[in-house]
Amino acid sequence: MHRAEPFLVKSALEGKPVEKVIEEMGIIPEAKLAEAKAKILGVPFISLTSTSFAPQAIGFLPRAVVERFSLIPFFYDEKAQVLYVAMANPVDLEAIEFVKKKTGLNIKTFAAAPSEVQAAINQEYRQELVGEVGAAIKESEEFSKKKNSSNHFHCLFVLDLLFLRKKSYVRTFESIRSLEVF
Image 1 (tube, rainbow, N blue to C red):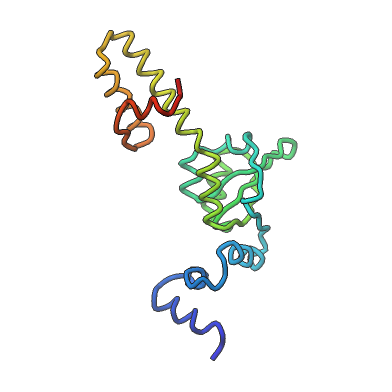
Image 2 (cartoon, rainbow, N blue to C red):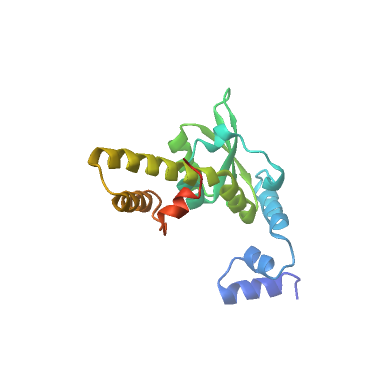
């Protein structure tokens, strides 16, 4: 019996990729598995835990795009017009083509551990929500001044704006104020 056979059997029985089975069994840490996969694919690997992110690079793509494709831009070479992007799946041609068209830049892809990509997205894009909340509140205040509305209406209008912008629920106006965006 070959050493890989138990993994292949489990993969076939559970309908999961072999690397997912290996990862779930805890035999190889996710980052090491991603690094090995990158080597096999001939794609450079990057550990995002020790990477600094250029704000200019982050600014090229909104959170919705990076979450959809599980990728994150980390460096922009202005002279060469190249955006460096870490990806959980560095051979996702649809994602690469989408980013290329969205930014108008050449894309240099790097493999990264999926959990590191998600953690980096959460860290680097955390301010995006706060900015949108602030914009929604400011917009609602301007609307309220024009309409001379009550505070209750103002609160509902803010919540409606946030729901439309982020498609998420915000329970109370006080929770928005606690974000200190004023």
